[in-house]
Image (cartoon, rainbow, N blue to C red; front, side, top):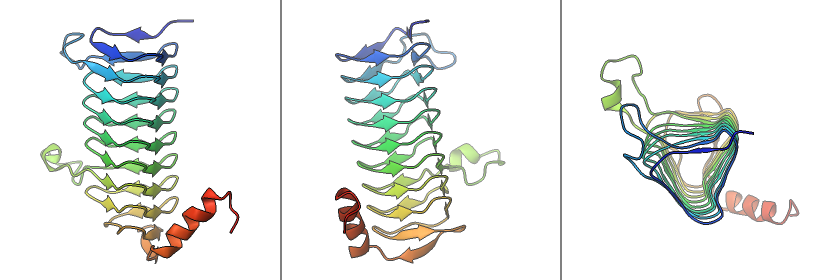
Length: 212
């Protein structure tokens, strides 16, 4: 079994686990190893074949699944879970307690507030004009507010804000902002429920194990 590769400049806390074939602190093209530090808090679990680039700051108790990719200059809070084969684009911000399931794509510059939940295969995009020569200058990353839930396979288009405690249904294509506690679904996503007490009651039911 091949051990993890930790580059110079990796600073990590106590009781961190790095799985076989994981690459920690990978430098950017053209930069020397250790040019940028990678800071990881305590009790991280980085599973096999995951790649974490240099330049990010990560809190405590990070869990990263097999084959995940975390680009540079990310800011990640405490108690974050990133599923297998998920990609986190450079400069993304992830708040405390965020859960990103397997196979998701989180674009460059995305902002996920504390407690957000991203379902498997969900895609957050940031390029409004991907074929244009100035597309990089016109990027607009989505914002997922605290406690919002993005269903499996949903697509969030550039510049969209999904409000706090909102729910985006599986497979939805979200082209416009979603207000706090709203429920949307479909392609393009349309409002199903206005949120409010409905969402709060569903959360209460779920936390009681499905008992009304």
